[in-house]
Structures are given as C-alpha cells and as structure tokens.
Amino acid sequence: MADNKPQPIVIKKVKKVVGGGHGAAWKIAYADFVTAMMAFFLLMWLLGSSTKAKLQGIAEYFQNPTKVSLEGGEGAGSATSLIHGGGTDMTKTVGQVRNGATPGKTVAPNATTILRAAAELDRKNLEALKKALDAQIDANPLLHEFRSQLLIDITRDGLRIQVVDSDKRPMFALGGANLEPYASTIFQDIAPTLNQLPNSISITGHTDALNYQNKGKGYSNYNLSADRANAVRQILVQSSLDEAKVLRVVGMGSEAPYDPQHPTASLNRRVSIVVLTQEAAKRIVSDQGAVQLASTASQAQAQIGAASAAQAGSGVPLQPLNATK
Image (tube, rainbow, N blue to C red; front, side, top):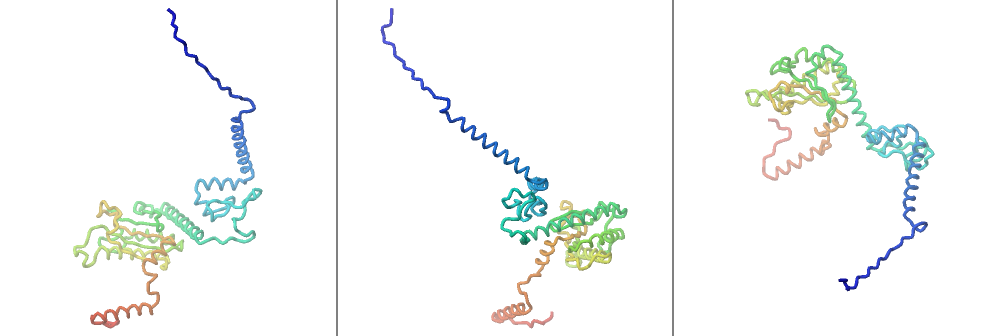
C-alpha cells in the first residue's frame, strides 16, 4: 500500500567562488618569495664586498667574542666594542672609524679596555713562563728526576709552583728548616727562570697535621712553615732572584692541606711559590694595610689623643704613649 505522507523538500544552495584574476592568495606568496630573494641577494652582496680578513674576524667573533674584542686586528673594527665595525659606507673594504670618532685622530682607549688588555698580557706572560718551566724541567735531568714533586698550575692569583714532600724524599730535615741538597738544587735552577718576569712573588710554607707536644705554646707548625718558606726565599735570592720581587713570605702551618682526606700525608708538607698577577699583587698590598684610615702621622696622633681623652673621662688611669712593659 502506497505511503500517502508528503515527502520533505530539500533545497541545496551552492556558493560559487569566483577565481581567476580576482583571487589574492597568490600575491602573498609572491611577496614572500620576492622578500626572500632580496634578502638572499643582499647577503651575497655583503659577503662579496667584505675582505677575507673581515670575514675571518666575524667568524672569530662568534667563536670567541672576548678574544676579538680584546685583541682587535684587521677586519675586527673597534677593539673596544664587542660588535665591531662602525660607519655606514659599505664601499669601505677594511672597516671605518668608530662611530663618534673624528677621522684622522686617535681614539684614546677607556680605563676598562686598558685593564683588560693588561690582564690579558699578564695572563699570556704567565702562560709563557709555565711553558718555560715545563721545558726546563723536561730538559734538565736533575729536575726531571723530581718531576713528580713539582706541581705547576695557573690559579686566580697567578702561576703557582708547589714543591711537595715525598715519604722517601723530604725537602727538609724532620722538624727543621734546613733544605736537603736535592731541594736546594730545584730552587737554584728555577730562580733565574722566575726572574724573567717583573711580577711580584709570594712564598708560602705548609706542614702536615702532626703537632708538637707543647700544644702550640712554644715552637709550632706555624713557626716551622714560616721558617721553611723563608729558607726557600733565601735560596731563591742567593740564586739570582731579585729580592725586591718577593712580596710576602707566609707560614700557614697545617691549615691548608693539599690532601684534606689525609692530613698527615707527606703531600701536605710543601712550599708554594706564586708568581702573582699585577691585580693580585695590588690586592695583597691593599689588604695588608697599605691604605690606612689614618693616612698621615698627624691624623694617627689625633686619633690617639681622642682615645686618651675618652679614657681620661672614664676615670681609667692614663699611661704615657712611650711607656714600656
């Protein structure tokens, strides 16, 4: 039997998109393509107008920016700027003067540049001295025999040469400050090499943790380490080291062991010679009181007078300044 129900009428609307010359999508793609080609040709032109030295300088900058900024050189532009070059004339093949500089006049380096250049030169000199010492030790049979007892490295304060004890071959007699003959030979041979640089020198003595039975009330590890450091100073000076270069001689006792896990080990008995950097030498002098709050004798006397007056006001008996005990 036929179904007499009315069927729904479906109307489909189709939206026609007009193409051809009225579309704009291809214009965006074409603009991107032209922009990319322009950037490519601009890069090719820049590379073609730069010298080989400048290209090498750019490559070195990305590998080590600090080195190029300190040393400068052809193609590196201004050595005082991390980003080299300057100027807008691209026809120049060797770089232009720094922006703000007057052509024909030398631009004075600033204080930061001078300090960096001095520190870099200091570092290079110390590295060269280390190589010279290593070569001397390898070439000298007497020094080469004791190579295991010579520890040479570069620290923040400068080039450090440590001569350490061995169980079978101590530098000093037990509990004394007299150098053994072989130890004297080591310091005698390296003294002329240390004298090659004008840098100041610091000498520090160290002992192990074995203490005297007097519990530090008499002769102690501090006395022993200071005496040993001074004995090394004497042999160095006698072997042509300029005495004016010795900035300080220090006894550390057992407070800075080389081998903290074994405080009584022979490695802890050592003498450390540091060829100081210029900055480290200035810092040591400043820390040790070269810059006083009272810069003149009159100011110091005024401070003493003020302290005496305060003491007198408190009722405490005063003692003359020249009183002796």
